[in-house]
Image 1 (spheres, rainbow, N blue to C red):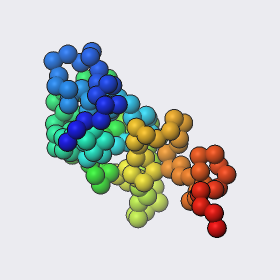
Image 2 (tube, rainbow, N blue to C red):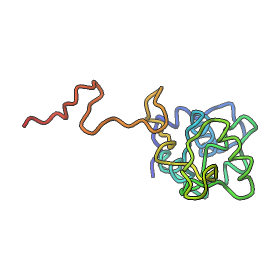
Image 3 (cartoon, one colour):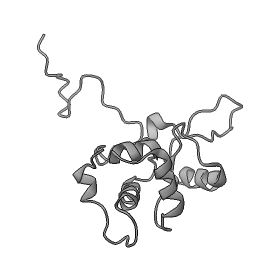
Length: 149
């Protein structure tokens, strides 16, 4: 599948020795703001190439210490088992929204609420986790859907 040019142009030339795909993955992950996340699958889908497993491979073998690796999760909002406690701690420190628990008060969930925290590069700057525009409201806030009726 063809790679979108807006991501190809963003591929950092400072990451020497990496494939274009590796650079695209890492550059996209670098753009995820604190408190927001993507899944391995949404990274691959956004880049229109690769697979969730390839993205996970890049994240586990090619990322550098400055890469916000904790912001990429499994499709169910859970962390990889081998780094789960460290990843959960980092996500909590960024105030990433977690799923509510059905257990006792004070119990903490170990899964991110993807409906609130999922980020896309097409999200507007300044959107807060969980912000949703009311149905039928346009960017101008007029509420017009463009349909007369």
